[in-house]
Every structure is written in C-alpha cells, then in structure tokens.
Amino acid sequence: MADDVPQQDIQARHRDYMSTHYISIYTTTVSVVLGIAGLAFGALLAAKDHYGNDYALFWLLGAVALAASVLTYAGSAIGAIALPPGVPGLLDLLLPLGICMSQFMMFAPLVASVADLPPRVGVVTWLASECLFGVCASATVRRVRTRVDAYPHYSGTSLPWIKDYIARLRSDGRGSAMVAAFGGISTVVFLALPQLSLAVAYVPAVAIGLGLAWGMRSNAISSGILHKAFDVAPTSPAG
Image 1 (cartoon, rainbow, N blue to C red):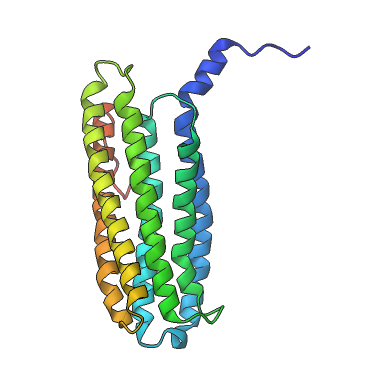
Image 2 (cartoon, helix red, strand yellow):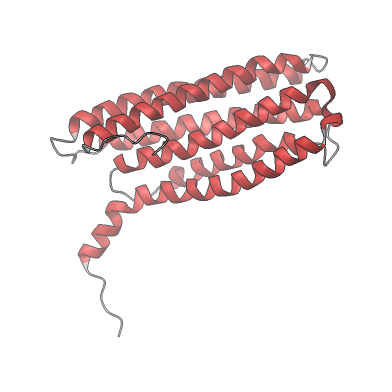
C-alpha cells in the first residue's frame, strides 16, 4: 500500500510551485533560444549578399532579439523569489508560451536566406514578433504585480521591499507596453506602405532596443531591492 503524502509536504510544494514554474519555463526557453540564436547568427554571417544594403539592419535586429531573451530570463530569475504561493492558472501557462514563441520568431528573419525570403518579409516578421513579445510581457508583468499586490500574508518586515518591488513592476509594464506599441505600429506601417525603405526600420529597432534597456535597468534596480531586503551584498560582474 502506498504511503500517504503528508499535508506538510503538499503545503511545501504549494509554497514554491509558482516561482518554480516561472523559473523552469523561462530557463528552458532561454536554453532553446540561445541555440536558435547561434544558428541564426551563423546563417547571417554566411548570407551577406542576401541582405544587400540592409545587412547591418539585420545585425541590429538580431542584437535586439538577443537582448529581449536576456531580459526575459533576468526578469523571471530575479522576480520569482517574490511570488506568493499558488498554483498556476491558464494565463500563467499561456503568457509565457506567447513570450517563448515571439522570441523564436525574432530570430526567424536572420535565417530568411535559407528559405530565400525577401528581407522585407523578415523585417515585418521581426516587428510583429516584437509586438507579440511586448503584449505578452506587459500582460505577464501585470499578472505578477496583481498576484504580489493581492497576497495578504507578507510579514511586516517584507512589506517595505514588496512595495518597492511592485513599483518596479509598474515601470516594467510601461517598458513592455512601449515595445508592443513600436512593434505593432511599425508592422502596420510597413504593411500599408510596401514601397517604404527598409532603412526606416532602424527607428523602431532602436526604440525597441531602448525599451529593453529600460527593462534591464529596472531589473537591476529590482535585484538591488531584493539584495537589500535579504541583507546580501550584490556581486559584481567580475565575481
């Protein structure tokens, strides 16, 4: 006869399940995305003639896509510790999948030469994927903020840093919304104006890159808040 599962074991699983879910899904995603990124950059190196005068643009698109992947992993790794106990709902499953899919799509234009797709198709695909990424990231941040804000059982010593962390999540949400807006508007513009020069894509690409930089800065601040809360000195990049 199988042993009964003690109630305290179930409670322990429940306490850590939500944070483990977010960390594991994004860790897996980043592992796969980095492999795809290596393949994509290799294809980009081997297909300079395919992109012509827009070759530098596609390197920029690749760099911004890689920054989005780094930001996704950093956000989940830093913020997961603050998540309250719980069982993932449908949105907790669908939103990370949307982020994952958008990251795969970001690197697709870099291998467009393999399928002999026109560079314009690659740019539009990249912009649309950034829009999807921004929408899903913004919704995920909002959902995490709602969960943290609504949880009533943080202890008194946790409340100050929880409030600071919630404020940082609001900033993250604004940055994600900006990425979605630039990606979506630019996609519509390029679809509506098929003769528009691809050089114009530098504008949304740089703007999206700045939005991601804003997110990385916010993550760094959140990390500092959590380090201070747990009385741990932040480590330098060198060690």
